[in-house]
Amino acid sequence: MSTDLRDLFPEGVSDETAFNLVSFFANITSEMESHYFVQVRRYINENTPAGLVEYLQNKNKDDSPF
Image 1 (cartoon, rainbow, N blue to C red):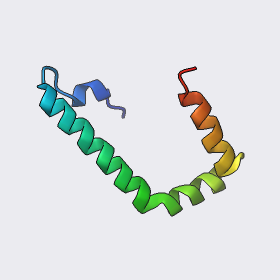
Image 2: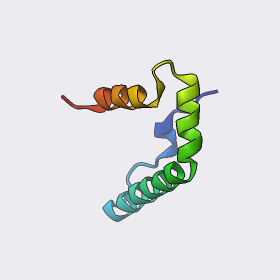
Image 3: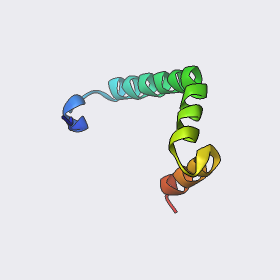
C-alpha cells in the first residue's frame, strides 16, 4: 500500500501555518536522526555495498541542484 503524500497535506493553509508545519517536521527529523544515528549508520554499512561514506557522497550528488 502506498500513500500519495499530497493527500496528507491540506491546501490553502496560512503562511504562518505552513511555516509551523515545516519547522515541526524539520525539528522532528533532526531529533530522529540524532537519536537513531548509530542504528542508521550500522544499517547502511551492513546493507549497502558502498558503505556509509560512499552512500552519503552519492546521496549528496543526487540532491545537488547542479
